[in-house]
Length: 403
Image 1 (tube, rainbow, N blue to C red):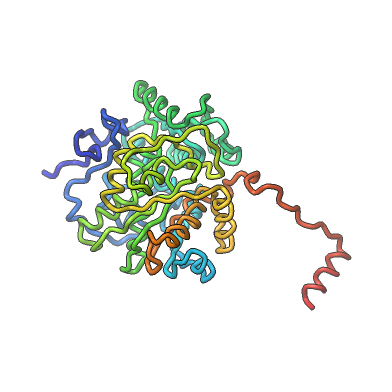
Image 2: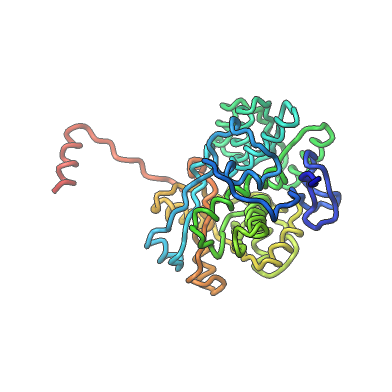
């Protein structure tokens, strides 16, 4: 009889049952789901990524009644002007802004509520800088779960409002160090038997794998050489890598794309040491950045993640505040209104090409992780108000534009 899926630390030292509340081993190493027999899994027929790749998920069958339509997002070729700007002629954007709550977090939330419902849990919880709280509130409500959302002080109001409208119970935490708050909340939650999920959780990562499955399909057999994405904690990157790794072991793809990890220069505990070839997290504190979704200054399990990154020859890059804001404008010119955190990838790619770390002939898929609807308007400074016109002025204006 085939062994059931279970959790294992990424250093291979500890195992836990699939339903465990733990996200890390006793030594602080991140956990991930292990699906025995993954090498023999096959793609099926189906309308959604969840149905087509059902055999690659540790819960089967997934209850599609809990879905809000996440996944199967557009894969777009960058415009000629963006190609010239970055120096990449084969640049693509995976537009995650069109997910139901406007970010990639929906992939993980869909999977997390599946587990809670399957286990008969009545509530779920998350600690979030905003996007995941919004997402879990929506999916929790869909699944009939009470949703607790712990957020740090300073979370933008435009991210809090939808949490409340989805009837999430929002608790603002006192304290300035988000990494420490996250660790404390996880410890207290486990003591109370509450499943509190973070961006590093092994079950969320199973949802994030779906992005890799889509890219394998959408690239038409020509996989990108690199996947570029902003990182805060390590969960999203680990999920993307895990998806490709499982497709590789199943024989569906012949190679695994390398990752490009991007962070704001003001908070780069992972990207900066990776750029230097170091395998230890460089903690950051007392910073502010327009990339408000990337504020984990000391990611738990970060050392193990950096060793994984170095072993796979991933790239790291940082961008300044000015470059982040300009990146938002450049993506808007592509027709994609992106969250500032997502826009970090634009200048990061340009820098990597310029310094020779990234070959200009490479095929790169940049993940646009969240919508600009979540941006704090203040990051753009004083935007001019549009002009007001009465009917006479409007007529003159329209005649002028038609001449």
